[in-house]
Image (cartoon, rainbow, N blue to C red; front, side, top):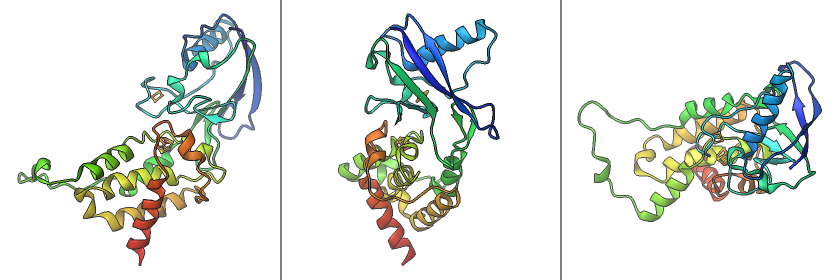
Length: 246
Ligand code: SF4
Ligand code: FES
């Protein structure tokens, strides 16, 4: 395939940034999207030009690092996958592809397609954990009965990889789906009940402090989420928050 790429270039956080056009040729449909980006970067380096900065790590849908907005959609046109799992067979020869960073005030651009998602880390630090007694008399986890239904729901919520696609897809740049997943994974388990009230209050407080918008039930986050996190978790987050603040 021969493709035209319109890619966001931005030298640093203070730079205004702009779209720059590139051509790539002989792209195999079997390549991943990031391999296509590698090909482009190799050609830029060969011409002594600055390669395009973009985030990636595991390249197998686990770490949540890859974060491109492709033709206006977080992680591109496919469903239930991250950018690193997107394949070029989703595009046609001659296509023009627009590639931008995830856009949100709380995710400032560091360079080109790389954004700062430390706001998510700070929300996690505010309460996304449980305290466990490790003094030598730790209770065996298997001795605490948990219903299959709740265990499954908790596991589903825990599959959130913190990629930020929910924020990038939301017209309000809301982080509610992310926070809802992180709150739900513990709210559904007995181990998470002990600190439940402080957890939800502290995480929501930090979410607001970071400048994320509120949820208006549009549901774009659920559609673009690579892990299929349901907005039912947002309903649970709201219930948990209400119960903790009454
Ligand atoms: S809820 Fe989905 S889209 Fe949002 S950070 Fe988690 S995995 Fe990514
Ligand atoms: S690079 Fe790890 S999820 Fe895409």
